[in-house]
Image 1 (tube, rainbow, N blue to C red):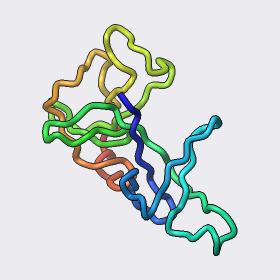
Image 2 (image 1 turned 90 degrees about the horizontal axis):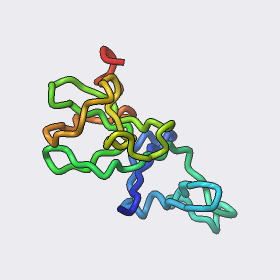
Image 3 (image 1 turned 180 degrees about the horizontal axis):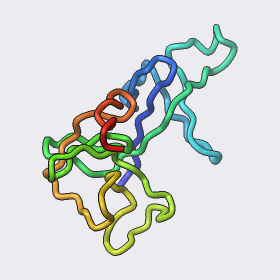
Image 4 (image 1 turned 90 degrees about the vertical axis):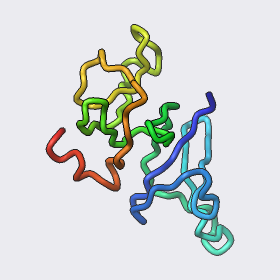
Length: 134
């Protein structure tokens, strides 16, 4: 699987995807990933302008409507309650007991993705969806 990313632009309060080529460029370096603001002309600015973003990775999973699930999405689980998609770093992306390192916050480790889950928002644009949960 090829890793896919999106970014929350903190300044413009907007979710940006790689397809938004007129707004963002994802620059991968040996030190990590940067996001360049493509709305600013580098000749006028004197160089590239970096965006203040939070970068989120795709989980490789899809909800029941075929929508790709990203880190920090808010998903209604098969039981009907909302949970934030989180990356459990101590597992480092490895498989532990057959479960990937992507989890839904507030659920036990034994919960597995059923395909009946549905994205209802994300924690940047819709934080109110998790107010009573976390």
